[in-house]
Length: 216
Image 1 (cartoon, rainbow, N blue to C red):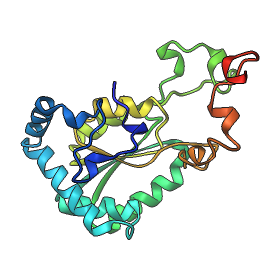
Image 2 (cartoon, rainbow, N blue to C red):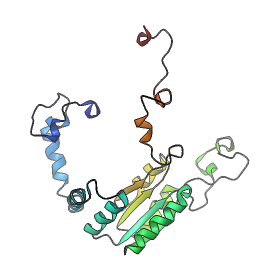
Image 3 (cartoon, rainbow, N blue to C red):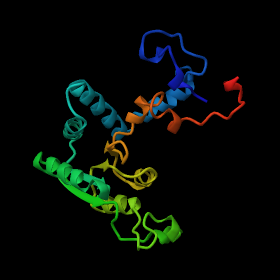
Image 4 (cartoon, rainbow, N blue to C red):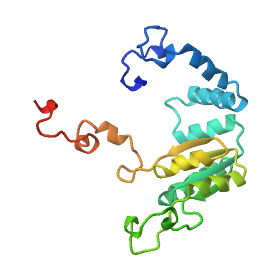
């Protein structure tokens, strides 16, 4: 088990060698194996250009600008855009921005194929609208169609939890993310974290049971 999220030392970011006992940095043999993976030409190229993009865009460029800068450094020509039907307008705008900056864009919406949800075993009662024919999201289709288009790099925009996992699993090209879905918070999911100890406390944390040790 690793507990980086709870670390107060952050020694891996400094010259200090005062690492916690469970710090991954202490696993020297494993780290040598990991470092060797950066010798893969594509992994090395991505890592190098990601760092260069960070240097040039840090606290100055938006995510969209940084993505295009990164793509330019990576010599990406053909972008795949996998987007949610609920973000159709955002997808259109992003397509417009990419194409007007000289990129070729293949875009595939989540509802491609028009496959009914019952195909994966869903009962009508589990549909959002039980009395209708309801089409499922098809992230495997998005990935496969973009594989067929032979894109250099794919961009995710607003895919649902789980659907994004399937896209990442089946995409042949590397993937980056522009935005993720959160219908309640205007597609800004980390806003919930800023309210986790305030207004969203009762939503995000388990409710205390009466008589528990914490209540004593």
